[in-house]
Length: 417
Image 1 (cartoon, rainbow, N blue to C red):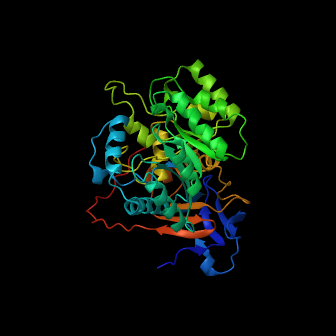
Image 2: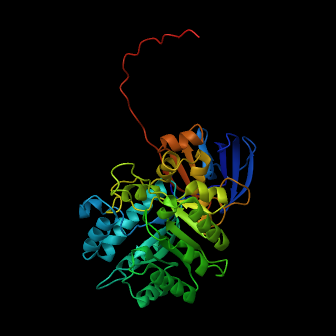
Image 3: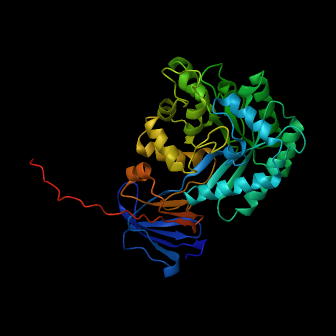
């Protein structure tokens, strides 16, 4: 059995997304050379991986996760339905959660994502109401520390409209990275948005706000973009969901895009969860719970995509796999294969303000190798045979063996041309 993690200095015989066969040399956590297959060199055999038959890609990053909620569906047995039902069932269950139970589910979920190739996660953590409101924060800080050598985890304080300011500041004091919330759920969405942004600005941290997660209603994203317009460029600023953008008229959408571009705000689409949550009130011609992907990409907005919830009241399914997200971006979002994979890898890393990564000289060695014949095969079949490299080290390796009883197959008849 391979010992993990281990430092890698050479990947041999890989196929890149463009179809070329290459050797990739790595020094520390950085890709230093991409050479024709057979020309690379390594310090030792133990630091070499022969990846003949594998496609090498930038490792996915998950820009919007809820590890504190993950894997709770079977524990809660919630009603299936829209966002309101999901919120109500989650709030009821959160009263009995402990730091240990949250950490256990979050750890299992993060490791499942790592096994599938995700080497960076941005996780929204609920600040709870009632006693011990920072249980989730404490649990996720623990998990982040435990997995520090295997993956990058960034934490966002998810504060509902009823969470006091001082609890958000306490979470930041404990080590939370960004301020988040869901102002569209507030009685006065703009007031709650302004409150959250003021806290983040005062504390000098970035923001990732659940934004306009409904098919109808007055968008808040324009005010969001205007408030953060002159913030320091080193702060990460992003809006998640943005489902309302997908139902705006072209003239209204154009105004939103102008404001988003002016503030260099990242937009995060979450197809799995929003396709599940949105549209229940429209049994005929059900609208898609997606943001305006094509218009945003064409305009040059930085766009990412993630899975959001996995097997909790907000989404009963999910495979902890960015390739599932990419596949939905193709089928439901009408993106190309290249665009779809970019949104879960390079686009996600850009929105998360992570270093550029991938099989490119000078890039960080965050890499995923999948057994496949090309990118289309990677996304379509999602082979579980994978090698995952984080910061130049092999941190996960999965392989599956299948046994199929061989039937009696007739000799094929060659058709006439």
